[in-house]
Amino acid sequence: MTMTLIPRFAVAAALLLLGTIYEIQAEDPYQFLDWNVTYLHIAPLGVTQRVIAINQQFPGPELDTVTNNNIVINVHNNLDEPLLLTWNGIQQRRTSWQDGVLGTNCPIQPGRNWTYQFQPKDQIGTFFYCPSTLLQKAAGGFGGIRIHNRIIIAVPFLPPADEYTVLIGDWYKLNHTSLRGALDGGWKLRSPDGILINGRAPFGTFFSVQQGKTYRLRISNVGSALTLNFRIQGHRLLLVETEGSYTQQNFYDSLDIHVGQSYSVLVTANQAPGDFYIVASSRFDTPVLNGVAVLHYSNSPLSVSGPLPSGPAPWDVNFSFNQARSIKWNLTAGAARPNPQGSFHYGMINVSRTIKLFNSAPVLNGKQRFAVNDISYTNTDTPLKLADYFKISGIFSLNSIPDSPLGNSPTFGTSVLDGGYRSFIELIFQNNEDKIQSWHIDGYTFFVVGLGSGVWNTTSRQSYNLVDAVSRSTTQVYPQSWTAVMLELDNVGMWNIRSQTLQRQYLGQELYLRVYNPEVSFRTEAPIPSNAIMCGKAAQH
View 1 (cartoon, rainbow, N blue to C red):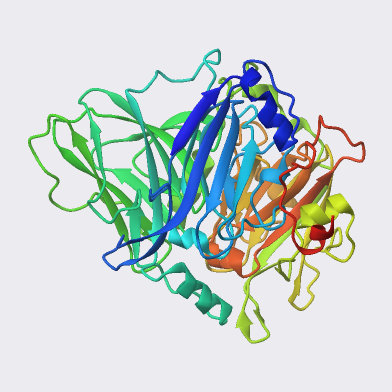
View 2 (cartoon, rainbow, N blue to C red):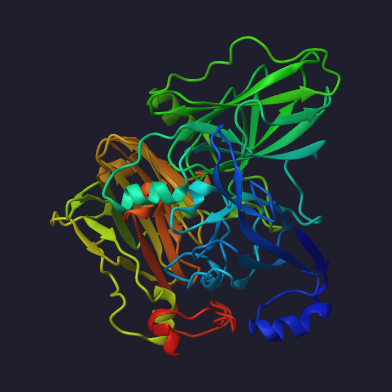
């Protein structure tokens, strides 16, 4: 990986070539990175397979940056199929052009390259990137993202001795092309074969610490299907941040981390010198799978031994429910801005629209599909964002998915919600299935105001947290349960709402939210990049 940090005046010519104008301050530097995406033949679980590597690294290189830095990443696709990378949790303010999903971008064809350019405007925190199409995430191509505070912004905890990125996730022994073939044939995928920690099988990853010092672990579940419970033998986890929001600082013996979610915890090496198990074990599925790493004290005379530390019972939903409700926003801490987060009183804003999204698993044309409000999403040859920009008809229709299910027979469709700019909405994720769900919204963070069992109704609002609900970009929905979130539609663009469970997203459990400002202004949306790839009907423009 190559990275260069350059002040603004040195990149004026590059900006003109990219054709993108941003409202930036003189102190906002640029980071230039060059990523070469290829296959490696390795055996993460003992069976040799093709994994997706970036700059010969699996997982890929970390994107380590600072609030408001301008990121320029030249991605070279040396796979044998098209590629897109998406930035899970990065809000992409005003620039859905850079989102890296099929509704906004034409894919990078084999042997070609494309340059992403975006700015984590007013963001801090722990995130990750990954491929967004063709089930490629099941082959790798993912890596961690750290966004640090600017020096002038206080952090609500003492600086740790060091930071470690911990990428946990389930893994299949089959190549992603074989998994994709099974889904294309109409089958569901079986349970994964194992759990990796930083791309390695059990006991393949070591984190070295010094006795008495405190460390920050940035943990992301980059897997395809399974909720994982994370714990460290003999050590408690002090939760401090999740997906860009500082949290109230509570200790946990273990944390349930759902697919697509990220957390930061502080861990103090306060035990007698030794080696200790780090475990990520599967939840809500059988058999229980364990990923294992080692926390190694630098002066340790011992190796790990004995049984793994126990976690919650695999099917204990109440444990996870109660833990989720205990995670709250830190109202006394700033994030990337000088003003406190708590100055935004979301609970006092009138909701202008309630949208209820029901997931389901229909069989269509004899094949397994997944759907939202009875519509199983199908991608178009022309990205929706380009069709909207060039006013190309016949690609999609606004409000082609209802605000709540109508009880119609399941069908295929290209689902797009029309979101009014600056409106404040309530979004209900309703899960009437027996499988846990995980949902993500690109371009936004939202307040997770409520979680409950059964079917949501208006009286469910009485249980909402309207003061300090955590703000994040991925939320879980428990089996036979609902999750309610609130968000202000202040980020113009075409934004993906998707299941973070890979096979569900691949087979149609997603939709798009179009947030449109009728007053064309670079203050609310950046212009189309001059390097935008054209495909489908947009190739004629």
